Amino acid sequence: MKKETKQLEIESLAKKLLVAGDSTRLKILCLIFEDKKVCVSEMAKKLGMSVAIVSHHLQSLAKTGFLESDREGKQVCYSLLTSRFNTDLKNFICRNKFNNK
Image (cartoon, rainbow, N blue to C red; front, side, top):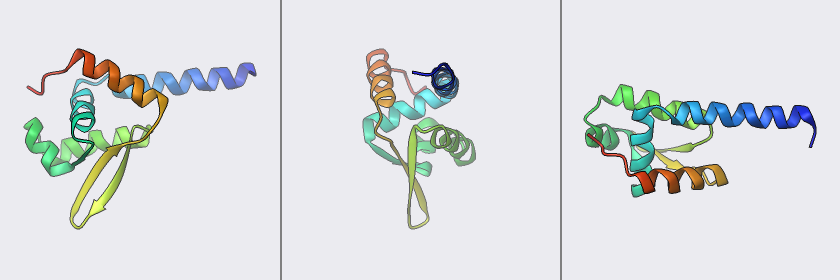
């Protein structure tokens, strides 16, 4: 593997870890791991947060490659993208079970 390619992979991993390392985003990921697909308003209610804040965090997770969004009428719902990193993260989070409070 070329040195430049390896460096790009390391930088990509660092960015994913930085985005996922936020406590609110970890709670969001935990909900999605449990429910498979969650709409923004439902997630905001479960977390006791505003729709705007939850939506902001979900967009960051989607932009970084964790989630995909799907519009269902007026609702925007998110689900986990399939990747080795996401599977490993799910196993780690579920083992350490974060509390939603």
